[in-house]
Image (tube, rainbow, N blue to C red; front, side, top):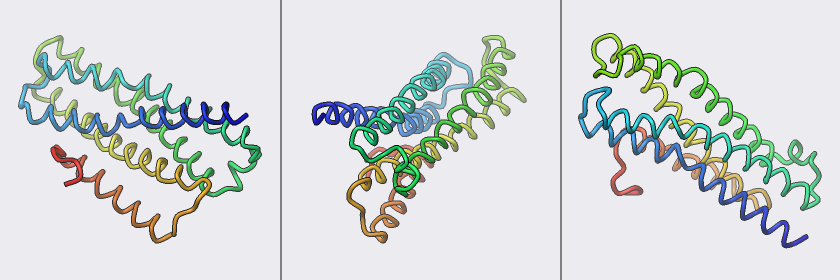
Length: 195
């Protein structure tokens, strides 16, 4: 049983590492802005394809994290009811649900609108009203990526507290630091990461 739990724990942690995509999306978006390339040119479309192509992977990572998390609870004999009675597990579950909802909103609502606008531009550089609409949709997507990054980092912090709780003041301080980091990643390039 110990080996199975170790494998599940490894899979769970590895999957959460792969869920760092919102940070890299923000980095990519901020770097795309620094390129100064016109909306719809080859570099812009290349970055857009990378960003929009990640949503399916994100679904897989989030669902894998959920399945391995539930399996860890089950095989550690905590009882599946602990997902509700243990506030940390409940918070993590709700945050994963929020991530899935945000990802679905982007995938099924925002991204099709962006794609349709690029189609409307007919393979040419987007300008005028089309460019303004794409810019607005991309700005919304960037804000949502920031929220997702905050949620992922919070889930990681809470994951450390499933068995050993932090002092509540430390938890609040870490949430504040997560918020500051996410804000910096949202505002522009984070060339030196922590500094």
